[in-house]
Image (cartoon, rainbow, N blue to C red; front, side, top):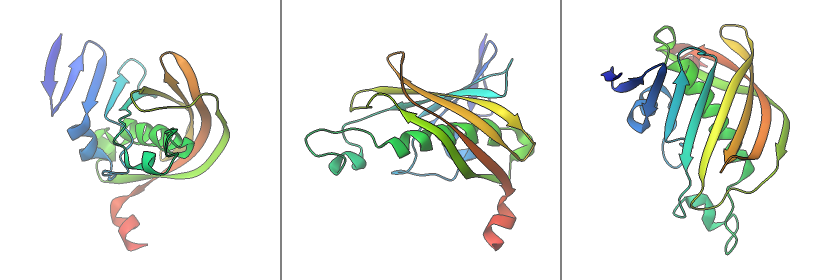
Length: 164
């Protein structure tokens, strides 16, 4: 079954959020938006898959590295964080919230990501404390692991964030 619900699509047991949907849930904008689509398994809402179509026109390729363009590892980690944010902030109870990184751990870079690659970012909740928790992320290109790591986050109300 395929039908539209609130601007995103429900396919069987998956909620698919496209770019315009993502922009409604997280504050990131180009050039710092690192995901193009997010798929959430409704049978396991504590995991998600984010996608980034890596274009040769990305502004970071101008300096990283000229003639040998590779996506900076920290931006792959950021794609993991953004995928996690969309997973949490797309919930109706998190409508007026923001999510912040509070730590990054056990990061390993295994393969480069280049122009033309489709980056597939898998994130899973390791520990859920409601408005804070720990995630595990693994990024792939063509089924091969490029990056993996763990990170912690905290979710705050937008009103409190603007008053800080």
